[in-house]
Amino acid sequence: MKIAVLGSGQVGQSLARGYTRHGHDVVIGTRKSEVEGLPVATPDLAVADADLVVLGVAGRASVELAGSLAHLLDGKVLVDATNPLDFSGGFPPTLSVCNTDSVGEQLQREFPEARVVKTLNTVNAVVMTDPGLLAGGDHHLFVSGNDPDAKSRVKELLSEWFGWRNVIDLGDITTARGTEMYLPLWLRLMSVNGPAFNIKVVVE
Amino acid sequence: MKIAVLGSGQVGQSLARGYTRHGHDVVIGTRKSEVEGLPVATPDLAVADADLVVLGVAGRASVELAGSLAHLLDGKVLVDATNPLDFSGGFPPTLSVCNTDSVGEQLQREFPEARVVKTLNTVNAVVMTDPGLLAGGDHHLFVSGNDPDAKSRVKELLSEWFGWRNVIDLGDITTARGTEMYLPLWLRLMSVNGPAFNIKVVVE
Image 1 (cartoon, one colour):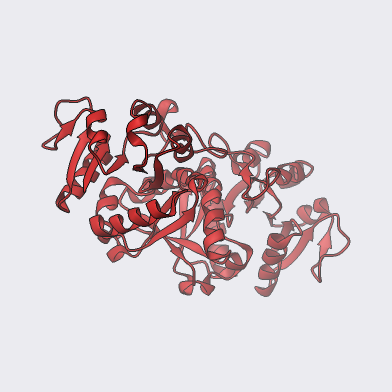
Image 2 (image 1 turned 120 degrees about the vertical axis):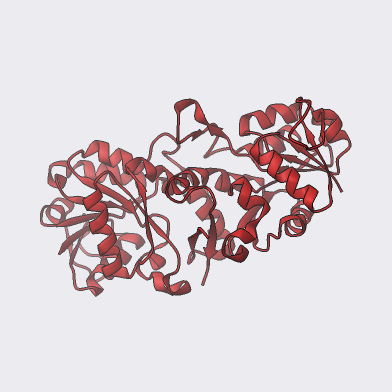
């Protein structure tokens, strides 16, 4: 499978290295000429050639970046791993969109022919690609999206790629508000625990 | 210890019954003349006589209700168990305050002499008073507040009253944004799991 990762920061690099370890043909879509040993292409070339597109850039920028690629995203699964963090007021950041909207919904509205799946935004880059680091993987990830087939495919891939065994389908793309608005709690927990943690949903 | 619970709904009643089971002298502060077998008093009388005040009414109403009792709250620990849920647009509710403020912060600003501790707002009434129902209590509750002594006392009481063993101190009252903004995720998880669940923070 050919995967384009948009975003050359920590999250984008971690995801790209994780996919590569699992034998996928990965390219980082970026305007940079190199990203620490990973194959790069311009965003439009990377997306045009990809079976699956992963957004790993900051929230606001992701909508703008994807905007230039609109026609190339039609029919493709667009994995949105971003959060709309606004650091303009310092740390901890606020959210640039929340409560009545989310980045996931913005992307789905902007690219109605793409199949947006929100996931991976509730853990840091290390946990994302190696959930087994914590309690042998006994904790949860979430998916939100309007297309059941796209969500199923992404759940399979999260398992194949990184070993995610516990993935909860929250519902349609509006449920991305839930995971994006969890970030303020995540940030406070990070101040207590450091960034390598996750939550387990305990039901009985 | 004399406890005043403000709020005669499901949360207020569950908390009052839980405290009563543990031998505390509890009164529900309400304008109603009776609340299913629990002792009631007007809010001002209930608060005047209390060592600890628990707010269990809906978010917006809590600030208004407490407003009429301002002078009575000076120096007292005010446990804020509320969430600013706005159902005016249907289900799931949005938050009437979030991102740059929280009910916990509003209360602390409104009553600078009260010692506000935000807690219990991340679980439903059943889990609140009986955490052992889920995984023998192996999941987490949070406290936020500016007064370390008030938080320590509330943590002790949560343990004594209900058996809460795992309580994470998130920091000052601004961290109430974290737990209040978790509610949109809680609501989606409730749609998947029903209301009797909680999260465990997995750190290793």
